[in-house]
Length: 326
Image 1 (tube, rainbow, N blue to C red):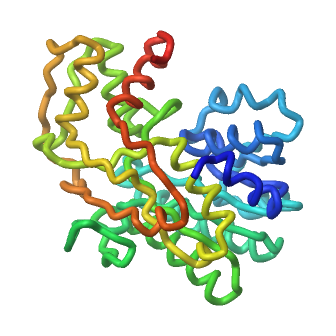
Image 2 (image 1 turned 30 degrees about the vertical axis):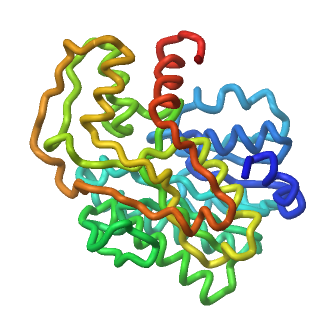
Image 3 (image 1 turned 45 degrees about the vertical axis):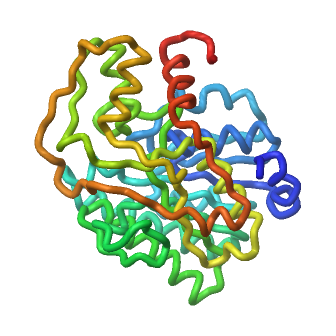
């Protein structure tokens, strides 16, 4: 199913959307998709990780509003819920932040989510979509990991995101709030942070552009399920239109399995920089070694994912290098 096929039903239900983390990597793509389709969109971001330039191209649209606000500031947040039909909650304390400041991590991912849910209930929001993460699972007990897999996170980030999930489920159970949880896995694409808070794809590309040897933590044989950011946007819109998604949790993963070593090999070949051999360092605390994710549940809703990872990655690299997409 394409985004264009999803929109007729989406337009019947929603008029105004609020996107938290709207200036971030994924949030900005959500804002862009909705704004250019003519929907009223309010972006909420405190710019601790989000960037003004991610939304710069949207400021010309009259149906777009950009707000600098922290989701932990419930008093200020309330004013922006008026007239909102649907909330896409993507604001989060990133995984790399949690080791430095676990209290802040919990405040944002736990209490921040609770604040939004309270306001969603107060303003009778039609739909609340929670961005979660595969980190809530922890180490796998069985493969492929489906949504019934036990949640036993091994990082502060995984614990705080699971707390957010539980609050979402409670508000659905107690108050009938129409909610859906999407667990993201290793999202990549344009606008991804390439600093220490970013994803491995963006970091490796930055290393190439700067002529620096990339760092791999662990053996590099750890697997990831890289998922294209436009597919994440499509999944959000899809579950917003499906009645059967109410109160449900979905793995939002491409199903592609790529090791970190394989990822770097592709990037080195595209840049023709085989001289930049990786530096291997100790494992990052709480890092998961293997991902084999079942996406059959969300595919039953009509979701289909980008499968040609190598081709898509090369197009993103071309964009970063300033050359035309192939």
